[in-house]
Length: 341
Image (tube, one colour):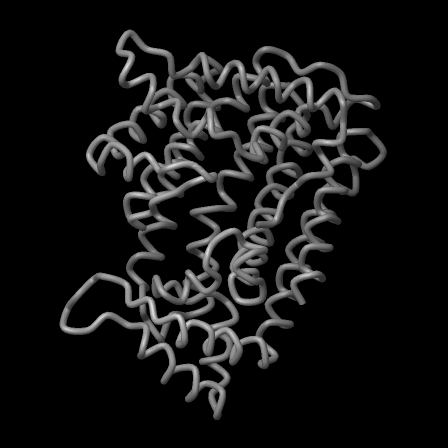
């Protein structure tokens, strides 16, 4: 998975993320011990906290040196992470996942119904926190939750669709991934009362980074090993989620497209079944075919273009410690792209 790890090298951000962690845990404590346990499950499992890191860092981009985040910035960071966590609860139900972040998934441990309700609870808590930060933040977070759903629905609708277009793919990842990273940056800017042009630039950076982040993550499913991913490579192919290298290979036509279609047919459910067909040999063959096509490199180039778009948006605000940290995160993502090649 692509990460924003250079951000975590800033001591002040490490301290702020510790405050975010405490606030995250406190936000889901209820009078019902069972609900607290279920809602806390993935929080306690840890995580990269990429979205809170972007919110906190964006809030400080007007300062020469990052200082401790305000309580409002910490709450904004908590709200975006709660939305992310709630979406993971729902994703694991849809994927019938058994593990998440090296621990048993909520649905595997307590069942789908409880996982869905707990995910809903996390989204509700995120909305409650956002409302405490003002109507603009509340409206922004609500719209982002809607975009997450729209992006996920677009992906579900196109499952196993050999005719999935590039525009449909980009629209889906814009909603399911980029929108929340854009919102994390925007909330950081709003609650810090930054100038509107700077808030808009941070939003552009977050969205561009999010688009690149998802493209790189999708590429790693094709180019990386099981050991590197920590899960079976080619999972998207099994789920029928045809990402950019698949779409471009099929659209190019020719022998490679014909061979890929034949292999994908072996992974497609038949007789109306919705259960994925995990044929390890077909999965491996499809990945070999894809890695031999120009589509992997062209997809890497697209990710790089999104990163550069985000860097360009930040250029007028260069020179501060926080802006430099965001730029470093983008450079790290480019490094991940190059390594994937």
